[in-house]
Amino acid sequence: MKTLHKLVAAGVVAAAATAPAIAADISGAGSTFAYPIYSKWAEAYKKETGIGLNYQAIGSSDGITQIQNKEVTFAASDMPLSVVDLDTDGLLQFPTLTAGVVPVVNIDGVKPGDLVLDGSTLARIFLGEIKSWNDAAIRKLNPNVKLPSQAIRVVYRSDGSGTTFVFTDYLGKVSADWRSKVGSTTAVEWPVGIGASGNEGAARGVAGMKGAIGYVEYAYVKQNKLTYARLMNKGGKAVAPTIESFSAAATRANWEGTPGFGVILTNEAGAASWPIAGATFILIHKQPGDPAAAGAALKFFNWAYAKGGQMARELDYVPMPSSVISAVQRLWAAQIKDASGKPLFVPPK
Image 1: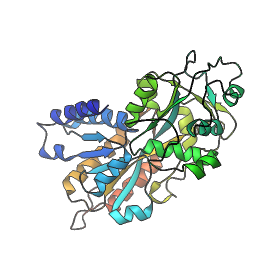
Image 2: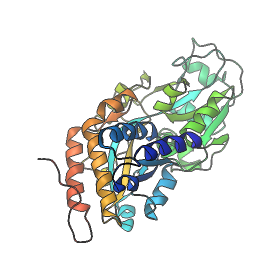
Image 3: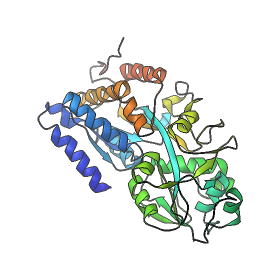
Image 4: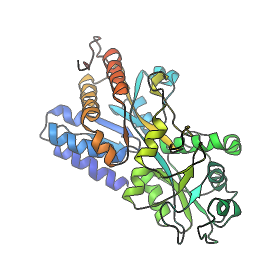
């Protein structure tokens, strides 16, 4: 995937070579969870404006490090930062989309959606306690599925990943053992399994290994034609990963009432809710070292809010509600300024 990332980014930058000089200064890094839509937006934005975007899909943790070190104009993270951390580094945080993290498997004879798992069983698989696909706990959830005596081979993200944060946050909510033994953050000490870098690496790892299970953002399920599992949600319903179930998980989110918009959407209530949903966030300096580049980045995301919704839906991302977009725009205008105190964004009337 690193090669693909470089090719896409190079294509966007090269295409922008004849645009104004500022185009080359819109740089971002981080989330692979959001990479499919950010690259799609970048291509459409370049066609419309002539301005390019260089986005490095290197994982949320490395993206956060790069924005803290002022190496990029913005970072993308699927783990929201606390207000204390934001203030420490002079950062502003805002959400762009929500989507779903999905367990994917490679089991002989099992097709997409055949397998049902619940949170407790999923946690026990990733703890290494359930070792075979015909284990009694899995068979109990799948009485009509022919499960082979295939060994389970866990694939996890080896890089610091917001996708890992969302996945492990869910496991911590449904399993006391997971919460006490492993915990939840962008990089954990996995009890068992084989590591892979990026959502694309995890997708390839599962696709290429019989008996495998892993977790990826849903766009990678579709792109790589992976076999997904349905999940039992908090309401006791077996649900499939769809834009509707991701949207249902976000319905009750209190975006504007949460500091830094840092809503976490795992294990949400509702019969239709996908239990491992999450938002992806942008981090940008409140007083950027390069105000022109920061202003250009804000224009890009403002364009994405206004015109990128359908492209997002096509990849099964859920666009932000209009009320949240308006709140984000007000925050940009109030807090992102140049050295003289002039706002870099004026919200539309």
